[in-house]
Length: 245
Image (cartoon, helix red, strand yellow):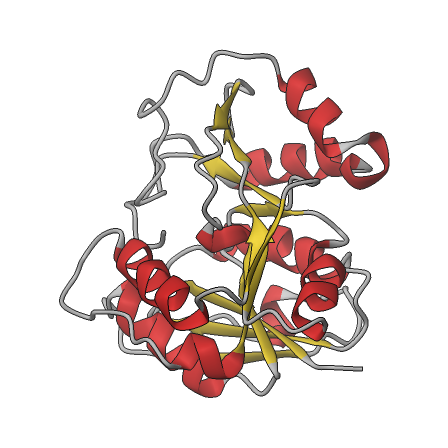
């Protein structure tokens, strides 16, 4: 079994830690670790952030407060122990078989693999909007061999959307050994006021969530509604500032 490192960078987002842990723990791939780079003044620890969830294979790496997202992503890549890596942002939903499907493609010889479609979801309004399929792997829905991911550095001078340039570099490094998985919604983005790239109001999140439930499937959706409701109770609309992707 191959170790899969799930990488998260964050700051000031303690309310999202239970959601992140739920998405990680429900993965059917058994050999996995969660690596968090946290630049909060008081970084999360497994004992405080994940209390009551039992043993969790998680490591929290500290970074100075205000450290940029690309610098933290580079730090997370350096810390990863797995042969494979995937990005697990703390406000993304994860399909429970995401790592399983990615590992199958990577085991078969791909250097990068992942889904090409996703959805945006208004955390508070409940509306959804489908991300158009541009036939390219989505950063948050992809997985990579560690060697391929580390071959490209995030540009630490870029404040926003550093993942786009990084993905271009990774696609070039992977070349024809890239596998697009077109049969599943591997992840979706939660749009809220603390999201740097996908805040509420940026897109017309006006379609019913039932469309997303159908795309995901009942088995994968499972208890998502309960965890969304719990997350809403922890997060106030308009509170804080956007410090993570």
